[in-house]
Amino acid sequence: MGPISRLLSWFSNDMAIDLGTAHTLVYVQEKGIVLNEPSVVAIEKDTNRVLAVGSEAKRMVGRTPGNISAIRPMKEGVIADFEMVERMLRYFIAKAHNRSTLIRPRIIIGVPSRITQVEQRAVRESAELAGAREVYLVEEAIAAAIGAGLPITEPTGNMIVDIGGGTTDIAVISLGGIVYSESVKVAGDQMDAAIMSHLKREYNLLIGEHMAERVKLQIGSAYPLAEKAQMMVKGRDLISGIPRTIVMEDTEIRGALQDSVTTIVTAIKLALENTPPELAGDIIDRGIVLTGGGSLLRGLDARLRDETDLPIVRVDDPLISVVMGVGKTLEELALLRKVTSVSTGRF
Image (cartoon, rainbow, N blue to C red; front, side, top):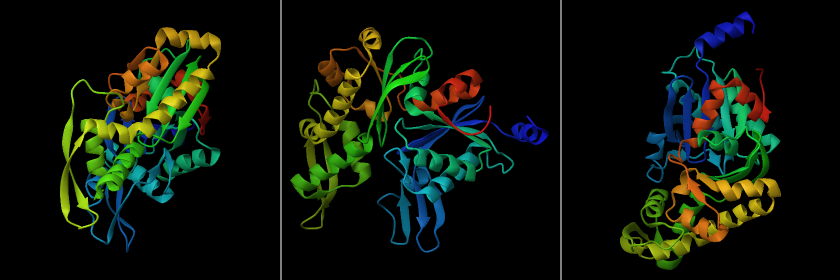
């Protein structure tokens, strides 16, 4: 390490970032998780000036006047708006480091398993433009497995399913590498969209993203519930244009989510079919590990148990397992070398 690099590292606290479609989490070395905010940027249309980022910007979604636009720059796990991701990362990096301009940290970012070379370059360049000294990319499935405490460097098979906001990543991991991976662009966001389109189609009721997410969390399920659940859903009548409230039941929302859940279940079955026999034996013993915010959908573990006849384990804190896993690679250089399949910079 040269004198300039040594000086830079003196000022920097290395960071791990889970750059998610719905939320971005930042882990700083020796401090842990310092930031967990929605991946949303609010801008003034005329000037393109950033007005708010994160939680403050999310509150503006669906509530902005004509001259303000709330943008979600990540779509289906990858960058949809390069400039906005760079601005968002710049804001989050500054916030995580108490706005110090001297900081040029080394950054490790979790990315979807099936990310293309072009998408890798976009993530890397946006982080570099936002102030990173070096950028490393770690596949989210491996990061989630590390964060969940799975013994990924051992010669045994571990299957992890990470259901995020934009994508569901499925991976069979052994000896620190991915033996088989599958990624489908169906996850939490698509479930919200399915609820919105169901209410529009069946009741001529237009609801926003916030309300759809609340419906999913309160009465959404993938398997019949022990007790019936219902909630009042508020929206705008498409025919009269007047605000209206209807009462929805869990059975109807389960029907609306059926296609999304079936897509995830089918992808998991496909991954099991493509798993080498020796590792399949390990999965029979260890089961499938569920993580990511989408895994919190009620009854999803029961549905998978029914479909696969395998043990299903949901990690204790599924929302943070990816960032915790990426964070652990910050602390252990040997582990970073082993799992960084797509990287730039020097060790």
